[in-house]
Length: 273
Image 1 (cartoon, rainbow, N blue to C red):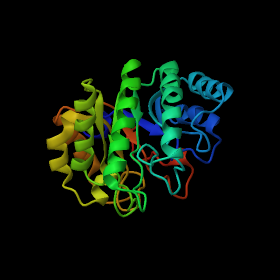
Image 2 (cartoon, helix red, strand yellow):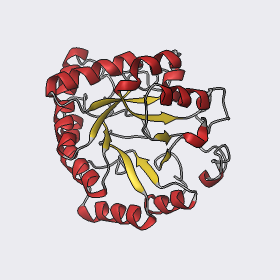
Image 3 (spheres, helix red, strand yellow):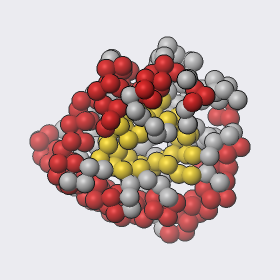
């Protein structure tokens, strides 16, 4: 048990960011990883040109890395935004325009998990109206993901860092997962269980694992406090991952932590060789 029994992938939107996007897959491969994930890499546009999409596919292929998770367009992330799909007007339109592009790209590289960040509450907008829009857009995304045999992931973030994001607990995210599955009948919406975010919310992580492992489609980790590599904080990550495995989770674990002041390649010293 412990870290040697886990299969890790590395998030190239938070690690190896000292390198240009197209150099990160090779850097991850050089560090020993064959699987990677990404936030939507083109912050400015939900619909990048085919040449940009082809260049990223080539970089992944040339490095021999498998893309295992991709965020739909989520606004300015990193930055003030936390998704676009519940934000009325132009952002919702951008999300919808992105659904086809993101799923087509995911299909082209064999990626089978797409993360749909919910979006912040908008001042002066009825939360119920935002939730209605969110469900419409999530149903659209779930159907598109189903069309390529993929899972739609719904993530809970943490309230201290994302105070305007409504899904700041595991039960809140699970409620949306259930609502999407009820609306589509497809059953391909799953929970993205991020141990860092849930710990920041003060949730009982063991209880969350027991309650929701069966509805979990992907797991991400960082230590707390600091969102650094395992061992830089006080979270018992090795034990928690063992508990997840014991509860039936067999998927990959995404490394979504900040490397600190050192190059990303030097931040994996906690991993068994």
